Image (cartoon, rainbow, N blue to C red; front, side, top):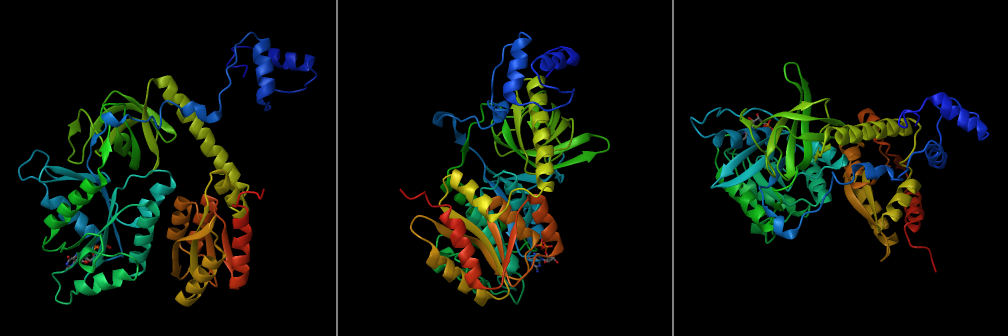
Length: 472
Ligand code: GDP
């Protein structure tokens, strides 16, 4: 405080002594005392709440009339070995215009292709882990999820996880039935199996688009892209390109030659070189914008993935970024956030947050009347029994919502889904694996273990009654 007032700290300490407060430099004082001191030293005090620091930079709303159509952002999910990476590669290569300057695409974490004049942006990290990790950090970038299922295999655990992750995020699914070139392929079996997981494809009377593809031969890729364009039209995706840019970090690294390099997805507005941005708890002046073909570009509009050079440090995937009006503001916000990050780390270390009760209190404060849960059990049968029991204790006012359930140990993926959905995790006759335990600790999420259904429903009931408005 003395620094900010350009006063010597001994003078401030002397003043405090006169007031009967024995303190030394570096001690922490509250806002009231700080105001008293500042006024005494002839300064005008303006009280702002902590989060006011960020106001005016993030989340500025747009007028309806300013919104223009923008390309969809697509993430590819599905079980391991069902062909996610192959599909991403096949789409990328099929769409590189022959002979175009710098025609070879670079891996920057996301890329854009064109289908009959419509642009589509693909997130280049397949799988729901990255998708949900980003969501857990507050970034909702994906508009459409492609669910890849191998036609020579069946619906597998990660297929189901992907479905639940997409549903939890409220993102529509397009099913890509892959490997149809294989003699053992049976696409119809995949469609039927998906029914059991409430994915109803068109030919089965539902509304989910499904396309048969082969990442190997390239068959059906055009149709898949068309389905994406169609789904995007239904979603009527719009953004205002004529404002300062905001978006999310997709990937970031420290490059030996180029310094800190962050790939961002512009979600609103247009980003240009020379602008000053804040990304997570980092800031910097945009020295250059590089697209997925390695070209330096002069501007990046909504849904455009682009590498930013010039940040002072490396932000994290899922961090939000925005343009700041000047260096001072950018620095102030970055420092504010670095402090928050440090404080959170300290709080986590002290084992705060995450108990069922605390979580309910938070949800109640937010006016939520649903209790999200991730449930892992030893066998499918016990999970169904738990789901049934939870259904019974749900009332019209508050209900348990199972974001994801499955048989087997609690994994990292369960933790990130719980974090993104603000859900509690319940293990019934199963434990968390070591990675999941670490992840839960890092995220400050509590895992509850049970082996009697009655105990479980009792606890959930108690927690839920905290969600009910107090009786009048
Ligand atoms: P991911 O784990 O989901 O990313 O799957 P990959 O893309 O790594 O593919 C797993 C394996 O399936 C690889 O050996 C691919 O060559 C193969 N594969 C992927 N797509 C196809 C396809 O359409 N047809 C055939 N025959 N093989 C495929």
